[in-house]
Each structure stands twice: as structure tokens, then as C-alpha cells.
Image 1 (cartoon, rainbow, N blue to C red):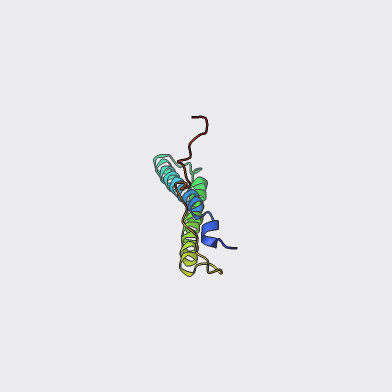
Image 2: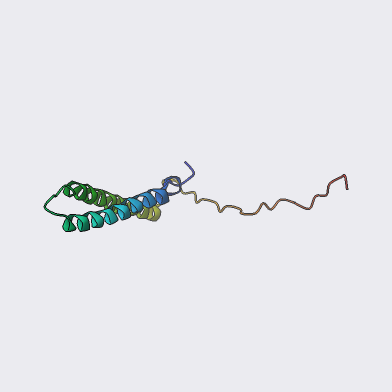
Length: 102
């Protein structure tokens, strides 16, 4: 358990998916509203509008909850006192070795 929970949990992927669901449902809700207003007395699109509002609410709640959990874990850290080590972008081994065939 040397790695912190914040580093192990895919917060970025969850936030991205929830934001996409929120944006798509917001757009579809607007389109459904415009089509329902321009239509006649037939109100068959009301069911779609309700589903889109539910999707918006759930994704917004998920976004807020995930952001709150991420901030809480970032502030309080993990149970272990170890800090993650920085990654090396370039391997700093001795690359000046010469081939014996030259």
C-alpha cells in the first residue's frame, strides 16, 4: 500500500465520462424541448425529456461527488506517509558504451 488512493483511482476518466453524459443529455434535453414546442398536441417526447433530466441530474451529482472525494483525498492524503517518487522521463544510464565490432 505504498501508493496513495488518489493515485490509484481513475478520477480523470470518471470525470470525463460524467461530463460527456451531462453535456449530451443537456443538448438532447434542449432539442427535445424545441421539437416538443414546435410539434402539435402530440406529447410523446415528454418521456424522453424526463429521461434526459434524470440523466443530467445523476451525472451532475456524480460530478460533484467525485470532485468532492478527489479534493478530500488530495488534502488528507493516504494512510501511509510515503510520497510518490517522481518519474524519470529519460533513462540516465550510461549510453556512451561503444560496440566491440567498431
